[in-house]
Length: 305
Length: 223
Ligand SMILES: Nc1ncnc2c1ncn2[C@@H]1O[C@H](COP(=O)(O)OP(=O)(O)OP(=O)(O)O)[C@@H](O)[C@H]1O
Ligand SMILES: [Mg+2]
Image 1 (tube, protein in one colour):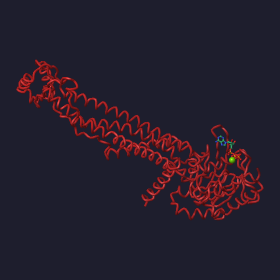
Image 2 (tube, chains in turn purple, cyan):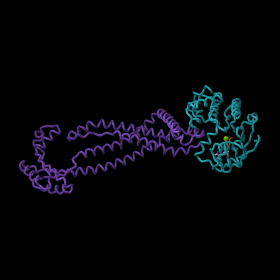
Image 3 (cartoon, each protein chain N blue to C red):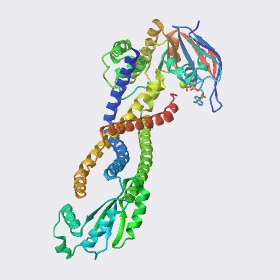
Image 4 (cartoon, rainbow over the protein chains, first blue to last red):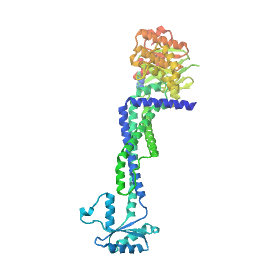
């Protein structure tokens, strides 16, 4: 019975709060917009990092070495070199991609044709793609890279893994930046909500005084204010979610086209349902906390006299 | 046992002003008493101590077996629910209807609106405002607003009604009407404590009267 009464009282206050929100909606809209943007920014940054990570993870984790051959090298010599490398102990396999094969695949990927007619000569070198033996790990790959790079006919050698590694390191940094951003903007939300609740308190000062005079507890007078803050945080989070959906919708077509260029089936991942719930919960809690801070600071000071 | 008991109560305000100096006073349940006295005599201070809006500097204020001097913050709401307070400036909420203003103490005590409705109407009936429930306070005359304030003060059946110059802004006829309402509540067992400047009116009521003079309390109508 106590539970039912408690619930009902809270529901009454909730309804009253909603009506109040409707009353000065323009003010509400502004602070909800600020909260929404403050929540959307770190969430978007988080999504960017997560998407980048899923791109990176789709790359083959095993190291691969690309050898760009000297420009003048004939196809026969290049094939011979490929065979030689393929025989090497620490090499799992070597694949020759001739100048013209490279061009054909490029033309197909970029959906252009007749590059030669345009450039007058094929700008690409012959390439050998070398896969080091799997058991060797990164150190072996790096040693192999040095060795292959010094072979006659090889202009430049590149280890793909190094790039992936660096990318992951960058991602980690970005992730930390997102946390810092989220913390800073979380504080901003606290302040925004705290401020609107403070204004609400000062505009309802007489009401609070009168309520206290007829026996209202601090909990009773603060309840609608806490709801007010929580509601603002919640609405801000809803707005943030909408903003993310909107940006996601605008970007996904472009991203898909870009992914096609790289022969990737990558798709932009928006905020998942679970992440969305976390966003709503986070926004609501931030709003509640902001209101609680304002209430703790202001309400005690309001004593009827 | 008295409902309200002041024993050797002193009140010194932060500025150093002694508003009450050794006041002894007692009020029985269901008793009605007037307090008179010059401006600055300490009448409002006296009422504020009872409503826990101020704390006594020294001495004891016993209300309903509780020493208000030792009341904790969290116990104040419970005390105030046993009181009905009426203000000279009414202190109504202007964005709420007469009904909502009167219902406030009941809703705060946890009643539902439907449960409160009957008692709100009964209270409005007693002050002659039945039928004005849906109006906003600003559309009422001063006397009507004060009666809304009275209805709000009695709707939760307090043990003690406090009124600080409730007729200060009203003409003599209206003032007499308000006083009569107080007498009616006293008849049904509510103790009433009224501060008033209006000596002729106080005399005419024929109730017990005490006077405050420069922070000291004198029994009788002598200030
Ligand atoms: N909050 C306060 N701080 C400092 N001094 C105060 C405070 N409230 C009242 N006083 C002083 O205490 C004295 C008694 O004030 P009180 O309001 O009790 O008088 P009163 O009898 O109600 O006067 P009035 O008839 O004018 O309302 C006055 O001298 C007043 O200036
Ligand atoms: Mg006074």
